[in-house]
Length: 124
Image (cartoon, rainbow, N blue to C red; front, side, top):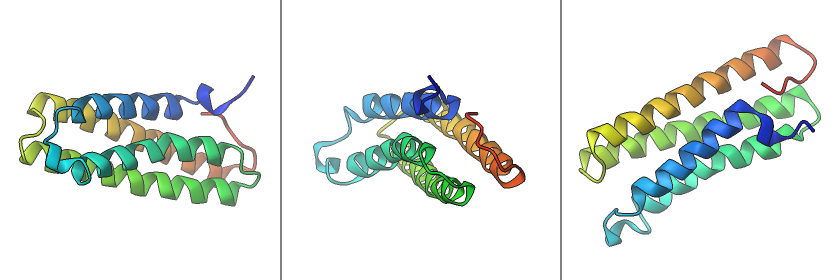
């Protein structure tokens, strides 16, 4: 069965969410409603929007959802930079998560280009 869970971009973004939850477990308590909440929210919105966008019928609607993904991904990248600069995560963890986010960005861009050039959906 062809579901959102079969999409490579969903798998990679879900992986990123799990890694971000792990990395933010030890953030300072005062950040619970700050950076911790913001980066988690931005990260889980990516696979959630992939799942929702997968069921959209038209290419226009699918592309619209991809635009939301790109915005959330940029937000995640910023919060990763901020977390590193505040020394909440090590440079090693930062690079691992940031590189994962970059890879997801490339997958999203590729899918968006495909949708704009073709009239049929592609499961990545």
